[in-house]
Image 1 (cartoon, helix red, strand yellow):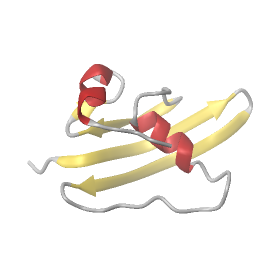
Image 2 (cartoon, rainbow, N blue to C red):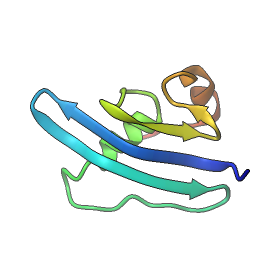
Image 3 (cartoon, helix red, strand yellow):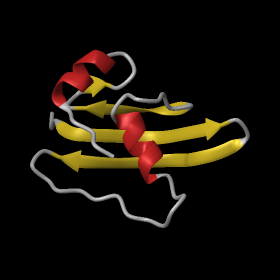
Length: 84
């Protein structure tokens, strides 16, 4: 089994009636440099805040080095840094 640095599957985030993310999925392999690019308002910061366990996704799932971002948020926080 291959361990990914990040696995995001079908992440959705809504704020009230506004959908900030719609079904975002991607993987980042260990040692890989990965960039999220897109126009303002595309959801880049929202996706990173979810992965950093600062906000919860409305639906979908994500793992950081096999730690579930919701069930193992404290473990994820021990191994990542986030500086917006």
